[in-house]
Image (cartoon, rainbow, N blue to C red; front, side, top):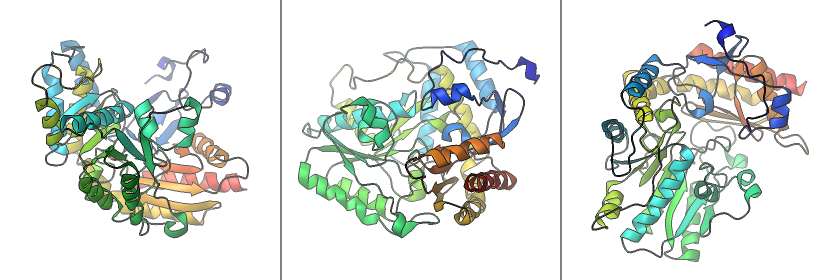
Length: 442
């Protein structure tokens, strides 16, 4: 591509950037102009290796021709059709394809436009289900400290990252939280699932004792990503599953990150051996080519809500763009690649190489923990006194300037590359991180 044809903005004022230091960026902008495979390119044509799959979402790499052509074809056939009391065939096809990947008995799919909308949708479905089966008193929702479920008020209320909440005052009522599972004193530098912490799931018993039979659902990420890659302790998720079943509580897995191959199976629940009642998804669903999310729920949930109404609308919820034709086309093309290229199998083939490379970071200056699972890794740094987050942000900028894109959250480097990664890409990512850490410490 001719670099002169790449648009260059001449005014940075209008765009209020999300989750960004707007003043810093607009003083020292770092731009991405195009992408292909494992690489981004700056407007000047400099290569930047993608160590984060965009934002955990471009699982099949960038610029996949199959997805582009599917979107173009669909735009020419049907650009939009509503799904309120009407529908179009491709939305049903996309839902059926998702149902082929979800656990057995989870064959009902509700479309959204993002992970945030998926989280709020899942919570509303859970509340609607409890009411449908005569449990109207179950109005309480339980999340987890350090959990991230998007930026809608439902997901943000159940989420447990303080910085995401403190600016906006009161959240939803009737929400409580389980403790997070990060135990660095016992589990630092663990490869895979940590040994200690399964008993933290038992805190749910305390919440049941406190709130009685008013809890509708528990929502957790199987692997917490945005808070800094927190891997569930061995047995933790199964204990949570058993307690939810015991107390009539729905278990929701937020698989926006762990869905579509990220940890070596179609969904993380399969690899981790625990089946929830509801799964949220987004990101890898369309390889991020078109915004789309979805919620898959157990058939018994759908049946209870739909059969509980004699006629008319059963669930008063939805979005203008639910099952959008272009997004559905992108999802189908993405799932074709997922199956044909066996992206989960690629993860399993390279995850040991990835793990070994990640844990070589343990000897670098200021590194206090390394953790990994599938094709995810977190490298935690000791914070600077009085300046939390500044050390990791400096490393982020050094890596970008050296041609590698990483993600940081607080003082944790979070890595999640496209699933098409090769060993030499792995080497390049961790070499850049290692060099940036040493330069920062010099």
